[in-house]
Amino acid sequence: MNSVPALRVERRLAQRYREHLEAQGVWQPRYRVQRCSDGMVALPLVPNCLPELDLRTLQLTVSPGSPISLVYIQTPTLSKRERVMSENDKLVKTLRELLVSRGERWSEELREDIPHSWQRHGDLVLVGEGCFSRLVWESMGTELWQAVARGLGCSRLAQIGRVSSDEFRTPVVTMLLGEDSIVTHVDNRIRYEFDVTKCMFSSGNITEKLRIASFDCTGETVVDLYAGIGYFTLPYLVHAGAAHVHACEWSPHALSALKRNLELNGVSERCTVHEGDSRRLPLCDLADRVNLGLIPSSREGWPVACRLLKQNTGGVLHLHQNVSSSGPPAGPTPFAPLTGRPGGEPGAGAGSAPPQGTGDTQRDVWKGWAEDTAAVIARVLSDISGRPWRTSVQHVEHVKSYAPHIHHLVLDLECRPL
Picture 1 (tube, one colour):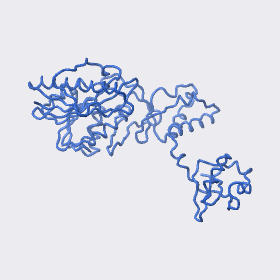
Picture 2: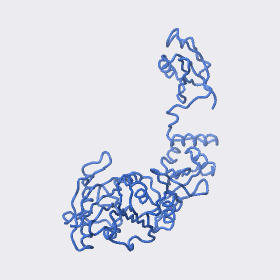
Picture 3: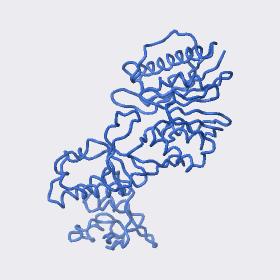
Picture 4: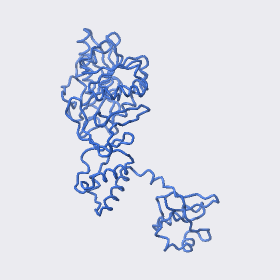
């Protein structure tokens, strides 16, 4: 980094001089003020202002008689604002410089055509679809992706399209820079290793993973019906202290990653992996807790989850669902309201954990969904066991929102036989 010209003044007068320099447009905000050992400070200046800088006039204007001199900061330090410049701004700056170097003009239309959000997995960044669609980018080839990687501070770059419609919900990912698609992602001291071209990873679920990590599952047997690469299985084992987890998954690629992640995190001995369709899981009457982390709806797993709960003591179900604030739950098999059904009852946590600004109407929708679900689960449990059950809404957690007005919720439902 080149040296930077600076005005050396008394520390007690630094703010007064700085304000004057800013007003004159000669203050250099990119760098920090440098303290000197003799009670003086060096205020960074814009280099091209030096020919017009009159120290005598400056001194008389700000503080007559105070000692000032022109010095150079040999090792300037970037200001806090410069250091924490948003990644988006850094990307814009890098791409603007690339375009100018190629004789192209920057525009706001191009700014809107670059990604504004992305997922970071170690040294690989995954950008979404719908960006870099304008013709000016097409001729740049690898040079463009190298610039994007430089702007985002990564060495590998990939782009994800829409999730495929196959039964495994395989992501459609194209590697743009680099060939190796295996990544390691660390959340809350848990390592997830997977192939970004083969397995889904939702960064938006971090709050739910942290919530699970805060549970006390000491001595419990947990079943994770939709384990994936271990999104929720691992927090139950690593942080919540579950005695044993049965993890169900049917995607071959996710299964491979799940087994690898259990080994990486040192918890494989406390987990049994079940390969195949969880609806055909040959287990029953063993779970203190069942996690149903499937969206847009986990409803197809409800009968299995009810069968898995311990029949003498019951347990807790964690039911995921996309719920629309303007209508019935979002999903392939929406159900009609079931208010008034016996068995389900709201608890103190019903409708809790809404995002800031949630209106009464939306709260009512969530509360209604929770109570209706509780009633359905009570009936299913009764049908399976041949005796009545009480279901109580412990909590409704808001995980994230989708447009328009669709919310990923988790219902914590306590289920006890009567």
